[in-house]
Structures are given as structure tokens and as C-alpha cells.
Amino acid sequence: MIKCDFHTHTILCDGENTACEMAEAAYKKGLSAFGFSGHGYTPFDDSYCMSQEDTNQYLTQIQKLKSEYAGKLEIFAGLEADLFSEYDRCRFDYIIGSVHYIKIGNNYIDVDNTSQILKYAADKYFGGDMLSLCEEYYKQIATLQNIDIVGHFDLVTKFCQQEDLFDMTCSRYRMSALSALDILIDKNLIFEVNTGAISRRARTTPYPEPFILKRILERGGQVILSGDAHNTAGICAHFDIAEQLLKSLGFKNVVTITKNGFSEVKL
Figure 1 (cartoon, rainbow, N blue to C red):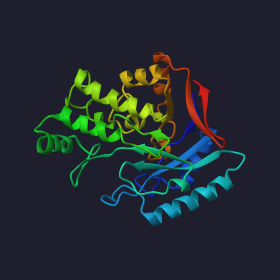
Figure 2: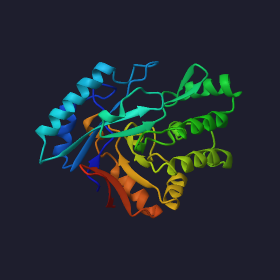
Figure 3: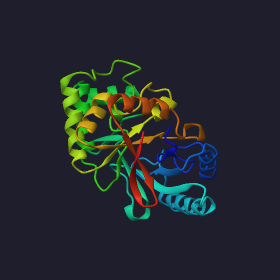
């Protein structure tokens, strides 16, 4: 199993453990590389993300951990930046770009909070048409830039295994997802295969859906495994499921991060 994880959170944002606890757990699990990716500051919603002051503390903590684990575990200082986050890219080793909100005028729809929020938003802004909401989500995710990795590409499907929000097999939905995907592939971005929703019991499969992964493979795109860990138990959690899925679709390699940048390793 791949023993690297680069999508993790600490108590400085919405995680449950300190940076020290996360690094120690990664080392004890035998990881060769480990990256932190705290949520970047979003000024309209600070309930889940790091403040600017927290971000400074975060980087200081990670720098200390890099020295502490030198020669034992490669540690990286990343950031999960929302489309609407404020951040200085130069301060981080890598950036995961995610869309947690759909912006409608001056309003922000929280994509992954509850299904009720999505239903209400579909009624209020899209005439009750959930597929129109999805189309807007993918239009906005297609605008991601100045990042390295696309986080949980089809996050808008988070609640679809729990209830019938919309038909993920219909051509209209799939066309909107694949159109956004093609734009991001043309930007040479890496796509994460994210097992976090499995850990949090929202899904039984990783993001993104297999039809999306197939398109990534067909287009020669790259993928990276992600635990989206919000506690020590989530580090590399369910990577066996993700690896099995990727192999079944024909993937031979995944991306990892090294001190020399991004590199592919065999599954």
C-alpha cells in the first residue's frame, strides 16, 4: 500500500489533533512522506479554516517538525485553498485547490455541510433543479488556478449515497463534470483520489466517481492518494480501497511528493 499522505488537517483548522500528534502518527504508521494541508483563510466563513495568525503558527510548527523528523520522515507544508481563500502561494510546498462553496451573487452555498443546504439552495437559486446547481459547481471548479492538486473533484456528490439528490448517471450531469475535468487536465493539474468521506461514513467509495477516473486515465492525467485526514486515524485510511479501484480501471502509477517535487510511483 502507498505509504504517503498529503491531505491532512490539524486543530488549527477543523482537525482533531495537533500537528505534533499527526506527525508522530504518520511516523509510527511507517509513512515515507507526510504533508499538512490546513484550510486556507476564507474571509466570509472562518468557522473551519485557519486565520492569518493561525497560518503563521501552522508554518512555524511544520518547520519545527521538518527538523525534528529529518532523516526519518519527509514532511511538507501544504495548504488546502478554497477557490475563495486568501493565501500567498510562495509560503507553501504545494497547494490543494478545492471548491467547498458555490458563489451566487454575494451568497456562498456550502457544498458539503448537509443535504438540506443543497436542497434549499437548489430551490432558492435554481428553480428546484439540482442538476443546475451541479452545473454551476463544475463551472466554478473549472476556474481553479495557481494550484497543484485538485481536491475531491466531485464533492457535490457527497450525500448522493445517502439519499437520492440527483442522478449521477445521467448524461447532463456527467457532461458538466467531464467538461470541467477536461479544462483542469489541460492545466496539467493532479487529481486526488480522496478517501476522507469513507472515514467519515458519508460514502463507501473515494472521490471522484469511476467514470471521472476513467476520463483522467484516458487523457493521460495524474492522480494522488489522499486520506483527507482530520485525525490520526484518517492518515492513509482506506488506501487499500482506493488502490484496488485504480488498478481495476487500469492505472499503473500514482503521484507522490518528494523534496525534488512531484514524482510517480507504481501502484
